[in-house]
Amino acid sequence: MKKLTIDISPLKKYRDFRLLWSSGLISRFGSMMTYVAMPFQIKLLTNSYLAVSLMGAIEIIPLILFGLYGGVLADSVDRKKMIWITEALALFISLGLLVNSLLPHPHLIALYVAGALFSAVNGLHSPSAGSILPRMVSHGDLPNASALMSLQGQFGVITGPAIAGILISTVNVSAGYLVDVISYIASVALLLRIQSFPPNEKNESILETPIKSLIAGVKYAASRRDLLGTYIVDLAAMFFAMPNALYPFWADQIHARWALGFFYASGTVGALFVTLTSRWINTYKFHGRAVLFAALGWGAAISLAGVFTSLPLIIFFLAVAGAADMVSALFRSAIWNQSIPDSYRGRLAGIELLSYSVGPLGGQMRAGSVAAITTLRTSVISGGLLCIGVVGIAGSSLKKFRNYDVTTNPFAVRQREIKEMENKKSSED
Image (cartoon, rainbow, N blue to C red):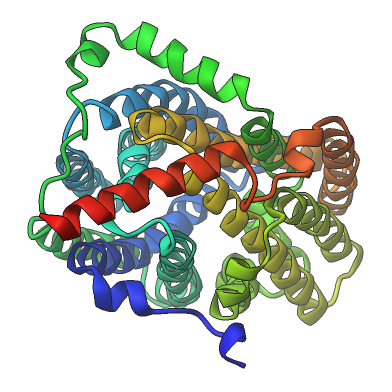
């Protein structure tokens, strides 16, 4: 039974990790309020599939540009400072949404502008947040720390949308934005207490030639077929089978508007189950295979959710999809964290951000467009089937990714040796 539980020892062993985890726990809860409030408010103002899905199109370009540059910055500046500054910027964007929502006639354009700004800030934030973890915990604790970070996010994704659905429908969207503002204030206060994490090596040249540095990071990623597999599979799964933009309309179609929060939270319930039983991840060494089969399971579950019109069955299959996606996420994080050199980790985190963010944003556009042309049900089912087909082709084409073994992969072995030498030197000092 011990193998079927989550290992919380990193929270006990590493103070800075504990502060980072607590900060994210609070801010994610608030962010999920805004995550539900924004499409809900757009729907109230327009009652249009395309208007809601347009948010995904607006967010893509800022995310790409600032995500890639955020990766360059993460390899050349203090990662703690980057996290703190971007969290503070997000606070002011949420405050702007709150003010707009209190106007007699809220501006639709303000929602789109806020979405673009959130995307840009997320692009700057995520590479530093994703690459700081290996500096905080030991090599062997990375899978458990990643699982705890997933648990942190899942708490917000489950409780945030569920409470947001009730709060927004019974009070108003302003209440959701207000909670987000308060959560960011608390998060920023916690982040101030974390020690600095400047680059291990002086990387001023990265800032002097950011384009060349970015290209070097892309070349490194392209040289590793095992890493390419994680990006391609996740991008395909999210682009073809991400139905989130349809949730407000889906709830209406089955006459369960009150259950909108459960649509948003259902996938995370499944993900939470996997996270709480994630200790087994340390004993399964074929990480590439795990990512591949999990992505296929995601596509199958999304298609099945579209087949049924019963709320319990829809929520069940969305939860199964969330569980499959979390298996994929945990093993992808293990591959990234345990095999990428620290000098490249920020830039690769920027590329990683694109793989798991651009896919869902593009997926929202695809889902909304197909639903507008055909039907919501067709959009969901076809997306899941396309996901299965594309992921299957990618898995069969990328042998090094499919056969990735953490115990023998030369990159993972090298990073384990470096970490052991660092720990030995630290203990001697």
